[in-house]
Amino acid sequence: MSYFRHLCSRFSPTNARRRFGYLSSGFSTSSAPPDRYAGLGPTGAHQKPRVVVLGTGWAGCRLMKGLDPAIYDIVCVSPRNHMVFTPLLASTCVGTLEFRSVAEPIARIQPAISREPASFFFLANCTAIDADNHQVKCESVTEGTEKVDPWKFTISYDKLVIALGAQPTTFGIHGVYEHAIFLREVYHAQEIRRKLLLNLMMSDVPGITEEEKKRLLHCVVVGGGPTGVEFSGELSDFIMRDVRQRYSHVKDYIHVTLIEANEILSSFDVRLRQYATKQLTKSGVRLVRGIVKDVEEKRIILNDGTEVPYGLLVWSTGVGPSSIVHSLDLPKSPGGRIGIDEWLRVPTVEDIFAIGDCSGFIESTGKPVLPALAQVAERQGKYLAILLNKIGKANGGRANTAKNVDFGEQFVYKHLGSMATIGSYKALVDLRQSKEAKGLSLAGFISWFIWRSAYLTRVISWRNRFYVAINWATTFVFGRDISRI
Ligand SMILES: Cc1cc2nc3c(=O)[nH]c(=O)nc-3n(C[C@H](O)[C@H](O)[C@H](O)COP(=O)(O)OP(=O)(O)OC[C@H]3O[C@@H](n4cnc5c(N)ncnc54)[C@H](O)[C@@H]3O)c2cc1C
Image (cartoon, rainbow, N blue to C red; front, side, top):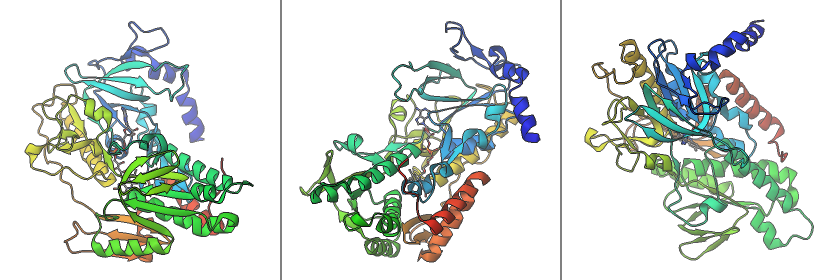
């Protein structure tokens, strides 16, 4: 009944007028065609101050969750309308989890985005920031549809939070963008799953040569950090449990190779690293120490001249500042991220904050640039939501009005530890602040249980928690889904 009432109220003519009425929401239509908005103008005295959030990752979403919609109107701009629960993304590539289980719609994280008349989500990319005029420039997402022109518009902000994340590093190696698949978004995981299953099907076609069969079924992962190792572990589980049973014709051909220039899992201590190496090797993952020099359509070439033919290539060598971050005329931290001070403000400009993987402390703070981790992004988002609510309550919410507000305590990061699953019901858990500190650090089945329990409780909504639990149970009982949809 309450659901029905909610539906009626959302689609009532009055509500529609309130949400899309130009005047009440601040849209200006000056030079734009009648059905297109030229942008969201500055907020008036009769409106709430507006927080514009760029990005729907860990940082942006945690911030929006904590913002008080009674104080601010929230406008979010991002090319995706959901948050990705990245620690479980690798599991979706082989069907341990379904894609929807790791995607959390924004409107569920901050319902005001779809309910409040002047709060919005725009499926668009931010292309530039005009800090002098408190404005961001955006371009709608067309997803390569050539018939649709990208829609350009501007949004005025009272407070701007940049949470644009990072982009995969390729070290300028030729062919990576063209032939490898990254693992950062749900569509990457979908691409990996489709390619993997396609290669499995193709390798069984009559007349295919032995050599081609081996190539198609050779899965190569470049990068031995937590993401590369977790993905390799998932793949080897898939091969050992599902491929061997259901594709028995090709079971002896399919292999996983993990290429890393240095040590795998270098952020973990030596004992846990050795355990992971032993375990991965036992489950059939070939570990290769090497540096990739060139990537071609069907093979990669290492520095020492070795040629490695592949059917599936996944690239996971870490992240660096994205092109939009490079292009912004804002102070930068060592390493090129957007520079921030102890309160996560971007110095030299008014009312701009930056959080998550796109930001780093400027040199003068004397603090190190924090690692590109969900736990950093999430805690920065949480801290900034509290800070912005406090600023709003102290009448500093509007543009250029927070100069005299006491910002209070600085942001302090305390590392909670690291976890990584390595397949075969095994994981590494290191709950120490650093490799030298005392505390819990273990590997094996108990760690795997801790890993699963920890992430199940961290999944954002009850709906997705339920999906994840059901997916895990279904996979355990019936195996992974191998349909190529
Ligand atoms: C597979 C995988 C597994 C991981 N596992 C862990 C883990 O176990 N533990 C851990 O701590 N960390 C993990 N991480 C790292 C963690 O996911 C990141 O540190 C975290 O996502 C950073 O959050 P963020 O909000 O800064 O950026 P992101 O989550 O990357 O979000 C950036 C957002 O900005 C949007 N965006 C990009 N360009 C534009 C633009 N021009 N305009 C508007 N919006 C834009 C993107 O669409 C996205 O919504 C993992 C990462 C991956 C990829």
